[in-house]
Image (tube, rainbow, N blue to C red; front, side, top):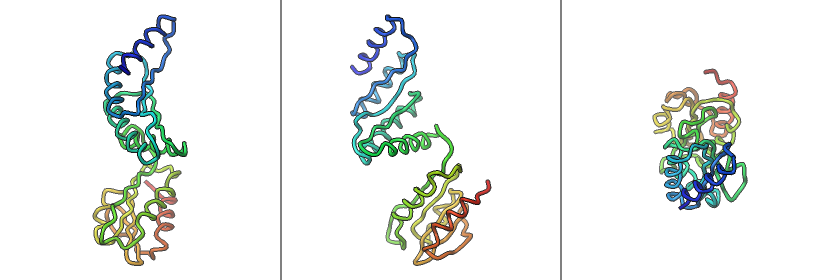
Length: 202
């Protein structure tokens, strides 16, 4: 019904002599929205503006938007996107960029990967990963940065990252391509990473 309604309106507008159109259909029902986009993409010659509307708060809205837009965009549907969150509009932009980057539709910017907390974690990993993510937001580098919670598995798990840090018991490690290149005090870990990024050479 959502797709048919949009197509009816497109037909009506075309009959009025307008042909420079962008079509947008949205729903808060993720899978219905996906199906509607699949149907309209087969029959509509115009660019599609896609999104999951009224997705909810930053937490639930991010999940719904990532799932819905992820499926739609992966199928090659959509020309522009909108992430709708009940929260700071800046969060909508961050989420949209990350969805596009995850799908390989956008390049540039540092990708931060981090491990889950476990019994081996000897550092405030949640705080550290958040600090790193905020710190690298404006760096114009196209690299992967890993934030690991322990010195045991950290280097091995970070080997696919260009650079990473791992926390120990009061000691931190700087890692490049899975190899430990420096040991520093835990409190110096974030600044050590920042300096490495400021002086990064591809």
